[in-house]
Image (cartoon, rainbow, N blue to C red; front, side, top):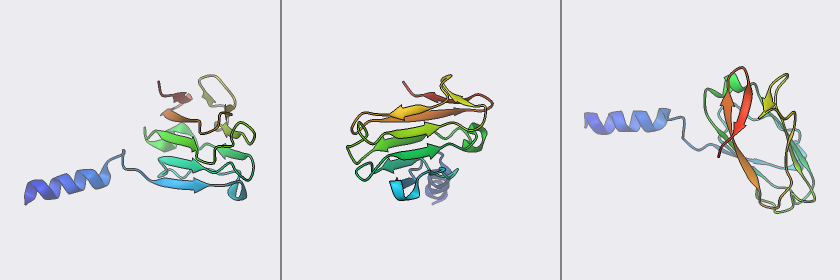
Length: 116
């Protein structure tokens, strides 16, 4: 029983637990919560802007941003890092491919890097 309890506690506190959030143009610009792990972005009704929190606030938890609307080639998803931070030296990262997306890994003091 103790091992099962410990396993459940580890799962509950795991940084890889999925907390998905739906994002539409109606809530744009959207600032991901520190607990968000996956953003499902519906681009069918328009473009969406995601303004990232400082990387240090992510506590090393990656953030997935995915176009589920299939219209990102027309209605881009614009991802903006916070303040002086960058995304691999970029001040803005676009999702401009239908059904495209990125996995962003936070790097405290630097910003974000795109997962390989």
